[in-house]
Length: 143
Image (cartoon, rainbow, N blue to C red; front, top):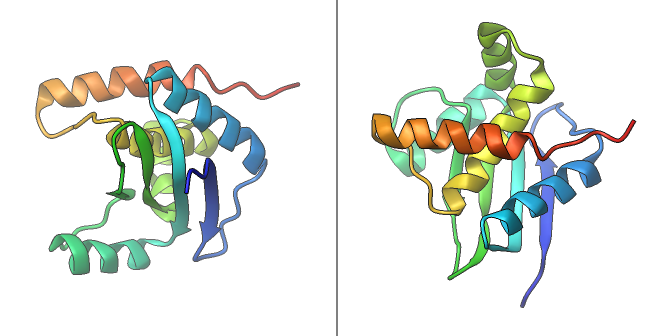
């Protein structure tokens, strides 16, 4: 099974606009890292939904904006990325950036984890931020 699909699901009232735009951008990001797109699902949810996943699967009792489950095989990226649209909204306000920009940052963050980037140490966090910025530049809305 060599599917090249990026799916978008919602467990709350959030709906991603222009899914095909996001899909083509994320595929370009994956390709730019020398990887292939397998089957990747983005699941948008609220804080409580993500908190429950954090508690159940990761034994963390904290709110977060993203949790990714990486099922990558070799160079083919596969997995599920859960994103709290509530948390993205709050972070966008805190960082004084548009919601869409913060959403793209979180989405590409999940993809970069699948590509092998970590953010545990300060050095890794710095590299992750740099990669996020670089990949966000690849997103262009056709006017």
